[in-house]
Length: 69
Image (tube, rainbow, N blue to C red; front, side, top):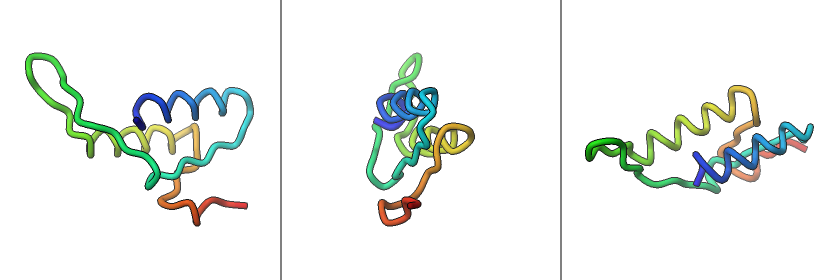
């Protein structure tokens, strides 16, 4: 899931000095329950997770064909 597994792996790689590219179309997440019965929709979590990664950790591309050489 993008908000957990992908984000933590990308952060660790960045900390080790690797250039990180994340392919947005190759990952997904799920709705998450939040306090007292509410739900954060997967689409919102996915968008926020990718935005956070793109801010300082990784280059985010839509598809594998967009990975820079």
